[in-house]
Image 1: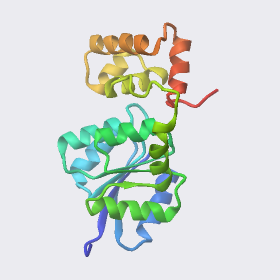
Image 2: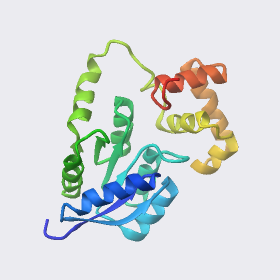
Image 3: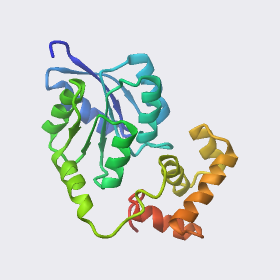
Image 4: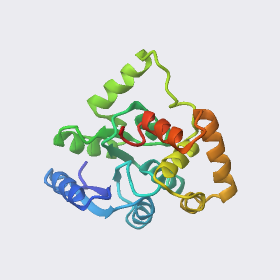
Length: 214
């Protein structure tokens, strides 16, 4: 591409963003047009900057990067969003791709892979880092079925916020839902995961990879 690719970086760690900015801009063909630290901030910055590519972490404060991805795509269906996350589990890759991500790579990937991914996504191609592609390829071979397909995308988002300690009212506000709707989602989540207590719900979230094992 003759024109420089513009990128919006979304990560809640300033040091991490600075490292990615330097890495991308030293490549010569990429300009970091802006940065964001949360889903709401990412959406606002995207609407203002209209970057060619959004490089977004999944683990953001409050609602996840996957929810931010959905909001951006509602505003601009042709948006190109590259998920760049510490999460290597297939469940997060699947959720991101199902939500419309143009690519996914982990933070364990070599620095050059991020530059390659941004260029590929900007050109209209889908990109998966080698480790992510291998994870997806091996997933069907696992005999033990997990709960990854049990929860809907909205229930998955509600569970993330629940285990982070958010109240039903907080979740309703962050997701733009009625508190009663959130309560219904909570009931459905508990039933689907067989979690009657807060501790059981926490353990289920650990199994799903939403929070690290204790």
